[in-house]
Image (tube, rainbow, N blue to C red; front, side, top):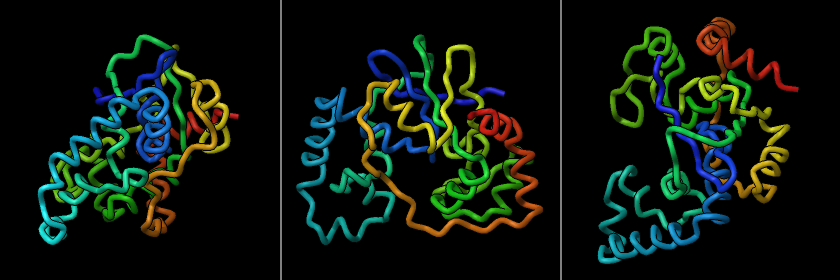
Length: 213
């Protein structure tokens, strides 16, 4: 099955864009170290686009629009990933942070405010469901992509969060990372039956995570 894999570009390596595994914090660290010109341009573009509108008008817009002119860049949902240069075909070493698949799934459901049961059915059937007010194929959504798809002979995996510091060291990034886009919704509690289904859907991810020491 073909997935859309994305990679953050660094001078000497790539970091896999693995959503809900410190991806915002990693992108922020990369941007602040390697792409300050792009960061400044993005901020200037924001000012040019939105400064002409009154706050009252901006407050009246849907939340999805308000994300676009959120000046709290440190906590933006998409700012850092959009500014950071990305590639789809890495030709250097790839570093991958791997999170416990069950925790990642629950965290993603909370983050996207979706129903666990409906999401599991969509993943199991490769079907569609509504994510962020748009119907889509859930198994192809960035936040629900399997983690093992990034693994090949050119990829080094790190157990998250235990080995995040080592990964940052190997990538030449400062540690600790600035906390970005932290979850504000309570994670759902899955039933034992739902847990078994998550383990089946993400079986290869569990094997990968459990293989890391």
